[in-house]
Image 1 (spheres, rainbow, N blue to C red):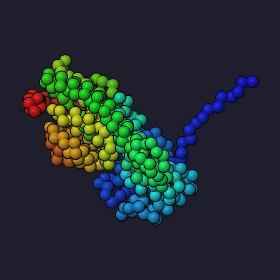
Image 2 (image 1 turned 90 degrees about the horizontal axis):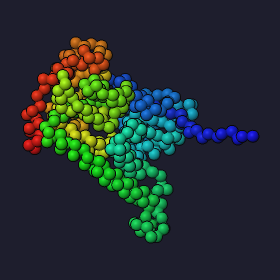
Image 3 (image 1 turned 60 degrees about the horizontal axis):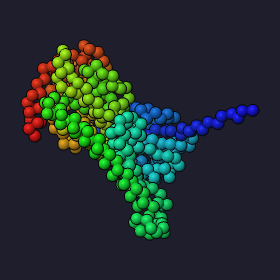
Length: 378
């Protein structure tokens, strides 16, 4: 008699979301911010039981969340049998440890969530290496919140660091070695990008870069302008790897256009550091197309966030504000008035040829010759 096959299945922990209206949050419409948090969880493929929304007047240094609110979360976890809590904000390693001790379950914060999404979404060797570096740097920072067992000293001799070296120190050194190895690999990959860039500059081929908040429609615009089939999903961080395509009108090449990773509020600094080699391409752009999801109530906050990240990267380039998804806007007239603050700008809908026409016309008339000369001379 044949034995029945035995399959091991990984049990998905019951999860509760905790969306926090923190005093530092710049979002004007908190409902939209909470919706973004839910979409992050969905983009990570995590099913959840329930979402709790809480408002904080002050941040508790030890646990981030006040005792009364914490008790509410704990009661909800016990009632629903939750084994994991995902919190919408960034937490320190010590805060995560204290929360796990109090709630009796695994705690993920915003950084953990975004890094997990990036790890699953990276496809190219460069993208995977960048995410791996960010994860290692994150794990190194998290060592501060590990339990007392990592503080115990080892009496083993013959190891680098000498007898009595703490387990935490050995773990940190191992992570640093892995980061160094990954960075060397990334440098090798970056050399290939530099060769391609030099060839483009020598040939004076203009470069247009799509930038903006995540899920603003950058990949959809790239596909529409270049008749490509780059992945364009209605999810956060659908695109991580930079994609470059020829930009042509009426059979004549205007230049090349690149899609870039989307930005988001509280983007982990580990990711910004790891993706600097890719984002450095923005330094050589002749035009930035700043794509904005004008249907999102917090679009003005999103513009500020993108500006701040560009500033941190030292990028100052000619920019066109592209207000996308105007077909989903409730009051188009109000949007037109508010958009006047951002110059130059156009209003489009990338879902159809007619809606994309203002961008096509702008790019046809755009003259990058003076910028190319300035770039090559520098």
